[in-house]
Length: 272
Image 1 (tube, rainbow, N blue to C red):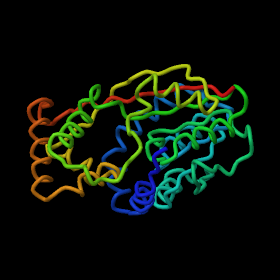
Image 2 (cartoon, helix red, strand yellow):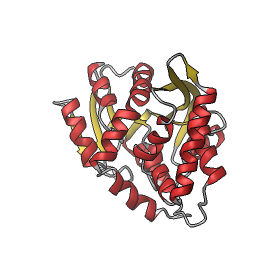
Image 3 (spheres, helix red, strand yellow):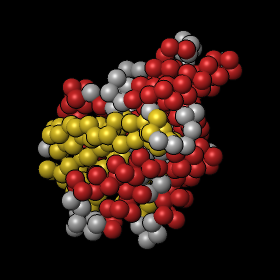
Image 4 (tube, helix red, strand yellow):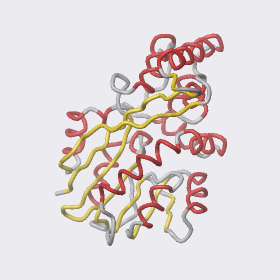
């Protein structure tokens, strides 16, 4: 099994950086929060005890509470949790590790992770913990980015990275898109005792004021993609920015802005 120690260290350092966290909330927030609203509707939260795993800035946590759930938010980033506590005062937020959850067996009716699983170096361990803290028949619901061949935004970004970058010396990272592939998601879930019952793609979009903003989103508001970009020469980074800007300008103009579709995979599973 590949170990992701360098990635894990970078994730913790990156999401402790207030500048990256603020950029994520500003740039990813509109898409992430739109998906959160869909997850709330899907989980039917009223009266349920729910864990918002990798809760980030707390928008989903607050929405679940507003819909009648008893909810706990957990994240490993103190910076994210500080924003979440301001966003949703009165809700329990816990700093913790998704692979070693400090909750009793069967504590929750549902666990939800809105774009959290890709930040976890040991995803099998996290899935096993999710199943452990779910009651029998409890549901796990997650959202993740769809693979580049199905998502124009990620296709523009990762197509550019692969075409222009040299990643021969890059530290290994977990497969960002593994859960977006139904067969892979099913196998990973099953290994942890979860039965996948639904896997669907939905579409959101980044609405940009300038076509260069898509590159800035990946370069300024992420940790994993930023690791890939920062390992390139300045000349290559400039070429990447130019290429992505051209793709957005040519393909995604929408009046006086640019609308770049981003596809999201939503997966639901049940714990035996």
